[in-house]
Image (cartoon, rainbow, N blue to C red; front, side, top):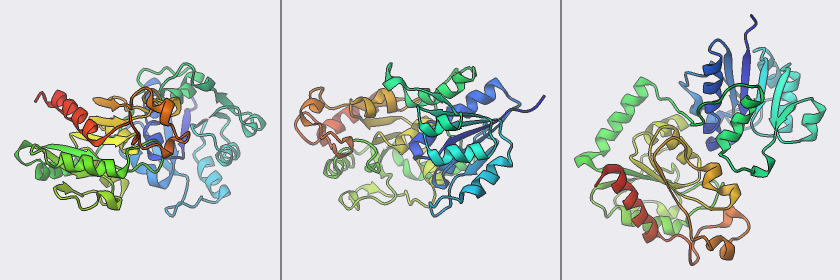
Length: 341
């Protein structure tokens, strides 16, 4: 029997790529003898390293973030003789790459003219009604082909050597049984976030807790949160994989809805996240999956009275929003519940 060969494409941000990791698992569990490959950007490939459900990782772009030439990419994909292609992000160039690569069964998202012209199947999110998680929407592509879905949780897998490295780092940091708290202050403007001044105040409160070891997880922290006495800065951004190893040592990560939150969830690291209740940014759509988590929202009326329309401009700083002391107090309750303090 001819082998089914699947290509899963996710050519956007780190968090989106993490949320695509359930697809190869669910495909392989249904069809263990099939071949599964992923096409991702160079900067996100480390999410899929050592993934037991993925046979091959293909790279969409160059290390300098420029696109590979169209026909070079077509040739590379055509050589793999894929039977099925999933495009989790609508993208016209990618749509034609998969067409000319000879993939007969192609599935995309939404109703785009280029999909119609190339006879690409589609799944429809129906204006997010009913509202489900992004990872669940991605899995609709498998359901379209009658592939059963039993688990929507994302996964990242460390090698044995990486696990040993993580334990060594944790041993150095976790003196006297301290709880390792990571704080990620940036998000590339992908969603609402606390202001940097709020993060600074929060970090200053955290370092005063004698049972906390505070790590700033941004590899290039903004000046407002740089060189805070008592905090440690061990994330150097040398590679995403090295950061993933370091994220795995955390006892809790504090952040907004961003890639590091999804990385930690996939590693089963507890997360404490600030979220906006608007549908496009909501915890129902983008929240952490598969780990212990706590989501902190502003007051219900906050968005009605202070929404800047563009969620990327929201920093929760107005009355009814989120202040450093409030975040600190709620975090302490979450930590207490985790460690039964």
